[in-house]
Length: 154
Length: 149
Image (spheres, chains in turn purple, red):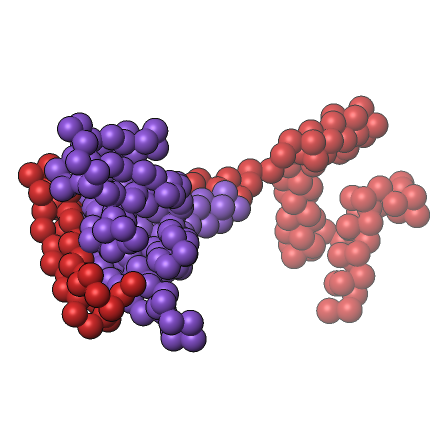
C-alpha cells in the first residue's frame, strides 16, 4: 500500500521525470544588423545583454526585431515570425549523451513573388551545452542589412 | 457361573452402600468372590486418591469473562505490518535504483557547443559553420544580392 505510490513516483522519475523529457528553456533574439560607418557600434536595449556575441561581426548598428524566452517542448516545433519575409522554427530533439540539447533551427524565406511556397533559407541542427549559445548570421535583409539570430540555452 | 455373577453384583451393591443390602450378611466366602471383593476395594481406594477435576463456579466466571474481554480488546498481531515493512523496503530499493539511473546519465563530461548540420534549399546560397573563440557556434549563410529581393 505504501509501495504503490513510491513505485509510481519512481516510474515517473524514470520516464516523465528524466531531464531530456522536460521542456528546454531557451531565449532567442532576432537582430537586424547594418553597417552605418559609425565609429562605435551601437546596440539597442534588448541587444546590449548579448553585445559580446555580436561585436565581432562587420556591422556597427544592431536593432532587436524580436526577443523572446521560450520553453521548447520535446519534438514539437515552435514557430515565430521574424520579419515579413523570414519565419523561424525551433524544434527540441532531446539531450545527447553528454547533456547537450539538440535544437533544430529552421528559417523559412517567403518569396517576393506571391504564390510561390516558402523555402528553407537555412536549417541547422545545433548541440547546445548548458548556457550554450549559437547564432545564425547572413540572412539578407533590406538595404544590405542582415538578420542575425542568437539562440541561448537557459 | 450365573450364581457367581449374581453374588458379584451383590458384593458390589453392598460395597456401594445400596439400601436393599444394608445389614445383610456377606455372600458365601469363596476364594474367587473374596478376590473380587478385594479387587473392588483396591479400585475404590485408588479412585479415592485421584484428585478431583476443578469445577468452574460463579466466582470463576468473572475472571473467565475478563480474560475473554482482554482477548477481544487486545489487537491480534497483524501480518500486514510485515507486508508494510516489505513494501517500504521494496519502494526504497526502487527509489534508489531510480535515483542512480537518474543521476548516472551525466557521467560523460559535457562537450562544447557544436553545429551538427546545416543546409539550405535556396539556389546560389551557401552555408558554413564555425566556432568563434568565445565558444559561440556560428552558422554563416552567404546569400547573393540578386534574385532574393
